[in-house]
Image (cartoon, rainbow, N blue to C red; front, side, top):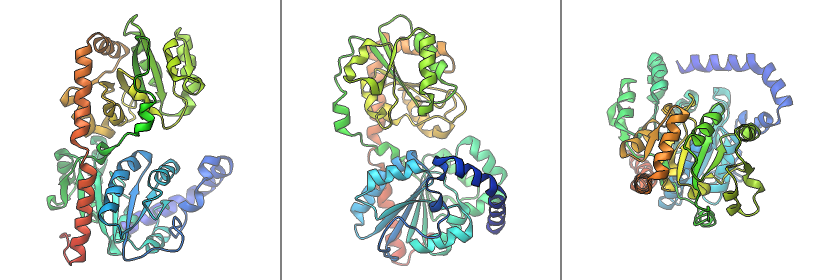
Length: 433
């Protein structure tokens, strides 16, 4: 089955190569890193690797890298002799790895395309003792050849959304084989255990472990600059990671909260939306400015709305807020992780399409610090309730902060389990396959 996948994927790639060539010629973003994606050797480190002590971590994009960062730091503190390398499928993910882990890992690179003539020699150049995969990065050739090479294959933060499960279950004759390459799978909930069991994974390989994204540590220096800002009595709503098609719903929801003294800080998921958001705000009579144009951030109080047109500041900006709106779930994008808003102690409103963060959303909803809405009126009604009830706003925000605190140690525990698996294998132990 893996051979059939490899042949089909290779043929599709060859068939699409003329179109890809045109895209690469005219799209600079796509062309950046293209040679890495077709490289047969890990080029993220100079001087070579110690093939007996390499642990390879793989995360899809910047969001998964954020979950991986504390695990790698904890693992390195437990196993200082190991050489750690990281791959990712996105340029932003690689940049984040280099920024957050530059002094901890031996190197980072983009993962090459998953066809055997490229992937197999790439893995040989790493010769990993273990491959640690984040969430649902189920690349068949990568998993198959790493396993054949003798590496322990470990999944952390494992999850399968209800939507993905339907596809996996329909193709279970294939995915049962792919999942069989994992030595251990650390998953986020009992619900994930049940789904993976139905796909043929033995329960002896499954461990329930809290998502390491909850081990997120905010940058104190970035927060201190914004805490205690004079908001001139305005209630501040931080709308984070808002996706295309959700902008007007969020703005109308903010407006429908009534004629209270309030301010909307609008952080789009993609910077290309900034101009469109500005046009929407103007059409609805809201005075706005760009975050980058503010010489003094306290000047935000003079506006009805602020558009965040910079990257990497949202976690700090949440600390200005009284409540948050989390994007990605009002349309069928699957949602975004509300962790940063929860770290700031904010109650938050999200949509009903949170299938990419199913367990996370359920935790916050169950504890009462999060609310779901589908229409501007529902958003406005909940914001008005939070604005008018200081006790409720404080209580629900603290519930969210408490959830984060309960899971602070998940990265250390995950790292410890990875280390114990390697120790056990070194002693000749193994997980039954």
